[in-house]
Length: 154
Image (cartoon, rainbow, N blue to C red):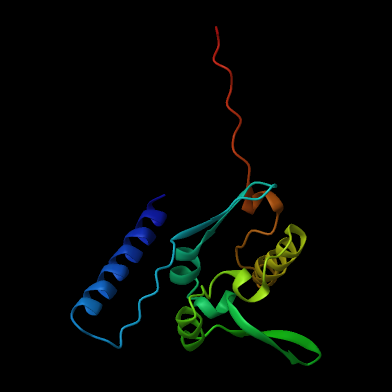
């Protein structure tokens, strides 16, 4: 729990520093608000994606997960990471670069599930193969709410 508190505090600090720099008139400073934890409610149970852990602990950047297109490389489609220029171009059109539907359109549940599982689970399995810790079992990511127990005597 202390680790999560430290991560949240670090992100708040970094966000505060970025906001201060922007206020000081540094027009080159780009600020993108990122949720510390992104929550997805799905049938198998809520999945929380900890941006803080992926960014601070693993040193990933937005382009690690978010792509702008795919290109063929050695017979396989490889994602091209999202760039700040692409984010700004989509924002100028009033679009959110970090929502799947911006580029992929409205996806049905099956397609959405396939995309997330190939992206998230694929990465986690690669990390496991390198003997690194990463959840790969359903219930390690999908958490169903605990059932409330009846109060005795009612």
